[in-house]
Length: 100
Image 1 (cartoon, rainbow, N blue to C red):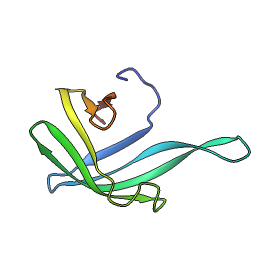
Image 2: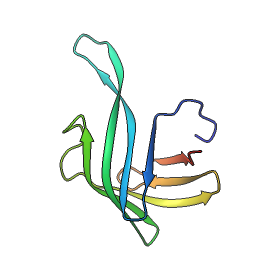
Image 3: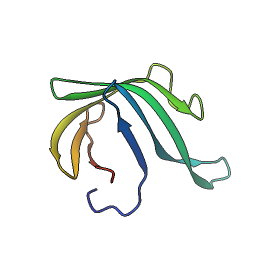
């Protein structure tokens, strides 16, 4: 959300089509306890017809994201402070704030 105070991830898209960053995932253990872990992500990105696609995703810890995983987002809006994207796999709309 545009007003969220906790950062749960960040990524940078470079002009050469690379994406680097991280996300935070909550893991629940067999004993019922849970913990947040940081997952580093590297991928390739492209923008075509208003759809932002991430592929060739690599994660650390390795294998956290399945090999061959592809994510596609429709760009709904972009402002100087962030963007709204729609996850094309499940329809969820997400706000991504510009770092800085």
